[in-house]
Amino acid sequence: MFWRGLRGQDRHLHLSMKEGFLEALPISVLMTIISWQGAMTFLMVVCLHHYIWNQIHMEMHKPEKRFFSQIPPDLVVKSQAIDISGVI
Image (cartoon, rainbow, N blue to C red; front, side, top):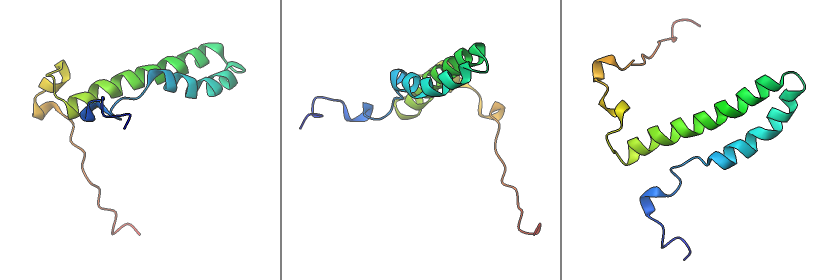
């Protein structure tokens, strides 16, 4: 099979920057009608999102002690569930 040469733990862990750029391009072209600066910003945000996602996701699956993995637990914002059962 064609994937035997690939490392199993690396498959499907990355968002492709190229695919992200190409997927955002049609929206960016439409945004150019309103603002070319907004369109360029949108493309940069999509690429930045993919880069940051890849860094965090790889740290989660294959820890390499990146700088953000050393954040003390008491500084991490914890989400709290909100009970809305009595609201209705």
